[in-house]
Amino acid sequence: MIEEYDLRIGLKNETTYEGQLTSKSIWGVLRGLETFIQLIHPSENGPFFQIQKTNITDYPRFTHRGLLVDTSRHFISLSNLYANLDAMSYNKLNVFHWHITDDQSFPYESKMFPLLSQKGAYDPSLVYSQQDVQNIIEYAKLRGIRVIPEFDTPGHTRSWGVAYPEILTQCFDNNKPNGKYGPMNPIKKLTYTFLKYLYKEINETFPDNYIHIGGDEVDKDCWLSNPDIQEFMAQNNIKDPEQFQTIFHEILYEIGSSLGSKLIVWEEIYAEGVNITKDVAVQVWAKSKYFDQVTEDGLNAILSSCWYLDHLSTGGDWKKYYECDPYDYVSSEKQRKFILGGEACMWSEVVDDSNLLTRIWPRASATAEKLWSSENVNSFTSAQPRLEEHTCRMKNRGIPAQPPNGAGFCV
Image (cartoon, rainbow, N blue to C red):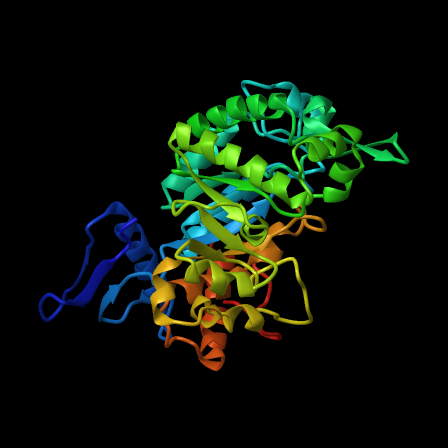
C-alpha cells in the first residue's frame, strides 16, 4: 500500500484559501483526508471551525500497522467491529488481524464445513455469516484497511472438535482416555485433508495475500499421552514432540503455497526450529529476543510483545506502549528492512461488546503513532496533549475512547 501524500493549504488570493491533496494511490488520499480532518479545530472567536495554512508531506515508517481483535472468547458484534474499523482509520492503522476462532468458540460460518459453527459457536446467533464477513472486508477496504484472518492451529482448536473430534488428539491418563481433547492430531492424514479444504475456502473468502495460521501454545503433553502418537514416535525415531510442529506446519506451508497464500505464524514456530521460508512472516508476542533473531536470519517480522492491550495497569497506561519502538529490538541497521511493522493485540478473555472500544482506544493510538511517525517522534510529554485532543476527536466521531491522562473534559 502506497500511503504517502502531499497536503497543501494556503492563500489562493487575498481573500480565499485553497487546499490541495495529492497522492499516487487512493490509500494515500485516505490518509491525507484524515490528516485534513485532524487539522480542523474550533475557533476561539465564535461558533466556527478553522484550519491553519500548512504544507505536509507524510508517509508511514512501517507498512504493517495492525490491530488484532479476538472474537472467540467473547463474540464481538458487527456494530462494534465496524466502529473499531472507523477508529483504526482515524489512527491510520491499516491491518485488521481477525483472530476469529479459538478454543472457546468457532463463530465463522464455513461453506465447506458448516458444522464447525453450528456446533462450535456459543449460540447460532453468535456467528459471522459469509455475508457478514464480506461486509467487514468491504467496510475495511473503504477505509484503507486489510483484513488478515487467523485460524490458529494446531492448538487453540478445541471448538473445532465439537463437530469434528476425529481431527483432534485424544488425551490419556494412565493409558486411559480422560475425556479431554488437545491439539490437532499431527499423524492423521485426515487432519491435513480437512485443513486443505478449509484453507482453500479461507483463501477464496479473504482477498488478502496473507493468512495467519497461528502455531502458539501447543499442549504437547496431550500428544505425549496418546498411545497412537507414542507408537508413531517410536516407529519414526521421534524423540521430541516439538518435531510434530515441524511436520504439521511444513505440510501447512505446502497447502498455503499451493493456494498462492503467504503465511504469518506466531514466534513458537520459529523458536521450535520449523523450517521457515522467506515469504513467511513471524509475529513475536512473548519473548522479544526472537524479534532480533528472526530479523538477523533475514525473515520478515511483526512485533506485538510490547503492545498487548489486555495487559492493564493503573491510570492512562499508554505510556508503556508509546515507549516501545520496533527498532529497539534489533541489533543492527541491516535488520530493519525485515521489520514489516507491528500490531496491538486485544485478547477478549475479559473483553466483550461492553468494553471493547474503551479498552482499545486511545491506548492503541500510542501504537499507531509509533508505527506511523518518524523515529525521532518519541517524546511522551509532547504526545500527552496531542493524545488528549485526539481522544476528544474520536469521542466526537462516535468512538467511546477512555480518558488517556487523567482529569479533563472534551468540548
